[in-house]
Length: 129
Image (cartoon, rainbow, N blue to C red; front, side):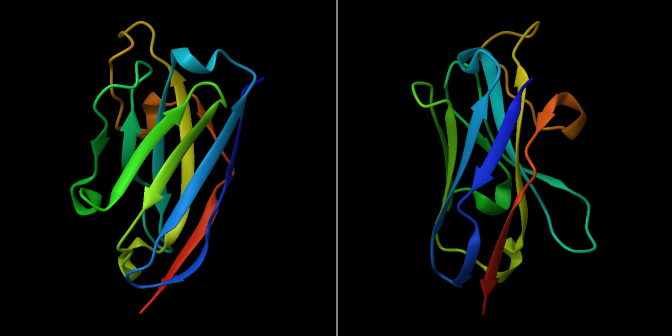
């Protein structure tokens, strides 16, 4: 059974930073692409960032490029999201998601919710102005 557990959320002032962590278990971590999504109150859940199974160049939502960095540590079965220069619009519940890269290949990137097979429970990020 694959389990994903997020941590690191909290309350921060605009311009501040947070680092989200997602610990994974129950699968061969290195074969999975990993993504971060977020859902603000009253809005649809949206893609934020993804890193491939091979750990190649990540892909980001336009509004977070240059501020957020996704990375993975295969030795610790963990995916991180470093968030800098936070804005009130970044306020949301953040979810990590995982899927095996097969059959598309270890460099594949996935940006759609329905492409992911496993989800964490979410961690709240609140950015005050």
